[in-house]
Image (cartoon, rainbow, N blue to C red):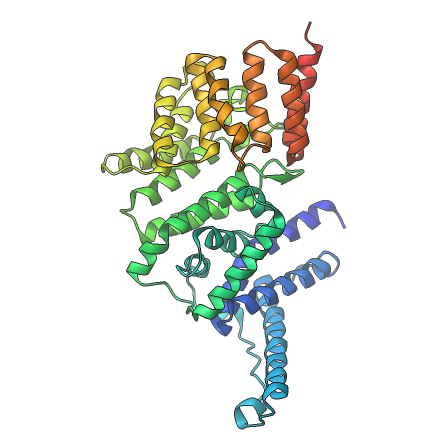
Length: 418
């Protein structure tokens, strides 16, 4: 069995997981048990498909296996209730039906979009809703989600488990929420899609720099949300941000999968069609008046994408846009990006000054990106020894192999300079 075949099966399973979960939840209504059943089905497939081959209808195969697991779960629940109540009435005596529909005859609709809104139920805290959706819809591991939230993995596992139980207790139906409920959940939905895209565009762990399946899924789902809410400026802004960022994907890595930073990329590889669509989207939505954080980030991405050469980048405009963003959000990652822009406009010392408050911010103080940005600015400031130390520190903290290799290479090149 080749690595390519393994990779293909893994990608297929990840793509199918939310579709299968949506089908099982629609049929049984129990989100927590359905998620467990689907995870078991995925595990069975991961063990069987590489050696036995992928079924002709892999989605139907997974639904059938998950349905059997759900039937087993229902039987166990009935047996437990019998033991606890000692009641042998007709309702408990009946065996649960084991649905065996043809998955090809499932209703044709965007089940994953419904699942997305279901996971963002108002009974959940914003953080729990986002974490659950990243797990169920995005297919991210608990470790990846914990990394995105800057919290320990054990904390995230507990948060996701509680979220599943709250969904179960809420009795949430598998259907698109009402207009008022949809609006209430929209901010969480957009944040989820943003995080899924980010994990796909710059994987937080593993040997691959990017996970195109994740970023493509995020773009597809954001398009679906925009079809639902075409006049919402932040929905359009998020889609524009994704398109303008993803347009650079082919230029971000070299032939060996190595990371290539923005200022060294071959811009002829950028996807001009995606850039044109993204610029048109953000230009149209900014003209409406009310401006949100995703629109501002898309505007920053547009400034980068419209520069034919790195030296053509309008850094003062980017710095001004980051200033507006900082007024909207207390996000340390924004401060990192603002520090880089400030260094490009006012010099590296100014950028380094902006980083100082982050050293005591528990959300990012030990994050590899803080060390990496500081190393970059120290290098530009003419302090190679300090830059080397922080490049090495950043390399030790990242779980991404391409990022680690890039950071170590930067340190090695500085060490070789006279």
